[in-house]
Length: 229
Image 1 (cartoon, helix red, strand yellow):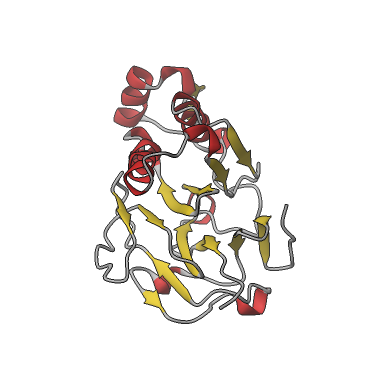
Image 2 (cartoon, helix red, strand yellow):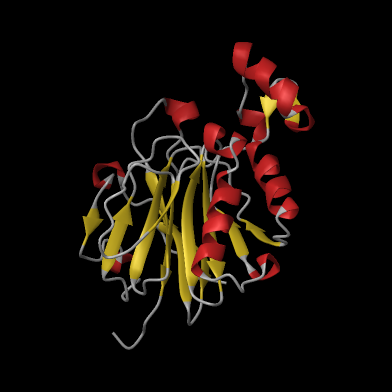
């Protein structure tokens, strides 16, 4: 596992990949930008050369990052580029971070709509475009801080829709998005699921829209390492 500090939570840090959340400031001003700099050097992550932020649109749209990348309007990004940090902004939605040992990573913003439309499956389909030989059983899924069921009450049309299509994940009008994602992962034969078990509503280190209607966002990051660069 990784190491944690005052302003970040590390979910994994090994020779190949770093996966962490940074909550030292509001990262929303970096939305829809590629920055050829390391935003996280002060947190101890020294190998990052580039940071990529999506223009998250609450969808299940997933793009593959290349040097000519221009499709910022998406909620998932996949990459094989080393020392390039894929950055997911959130303040209750689920940041999903995926890693396969062959050198494929993904950062997903799985909000309610993206979860309902199974953005996880969309990303796995693109993993296979990059490497048809990979096995889903070898993919690692990390669930970063996000809102938990007890703090996610829904009503009216949304409640009716959820009761119709996701009734097993509703309890007392509260929706369990994380449980939906875990079921989707299991259906895809992804069994290596590491949930940090932190609720953004309860843990005030993290921004939470439900708690304070904030426009600020913390960031969840995954980066492949090339220690020789």
